Length: 49
Image (cartoon, rainbow, N blue to C red; front, side, top):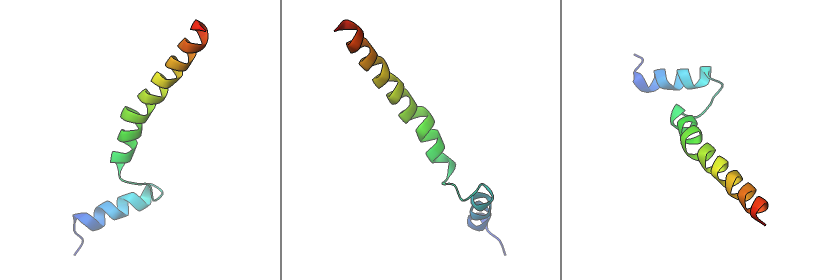
């Protein structure tokens, strides 16, 4: 009998063995805005100096 855990694992392997999709959301909503903010701060400091 196949349960939800096996189905999730099969789906994960179909996606190329990627992590659970929570990791993708984390990168999109946390890392990307931080990177953009850092670039803006660095550009602003360079323009001001």
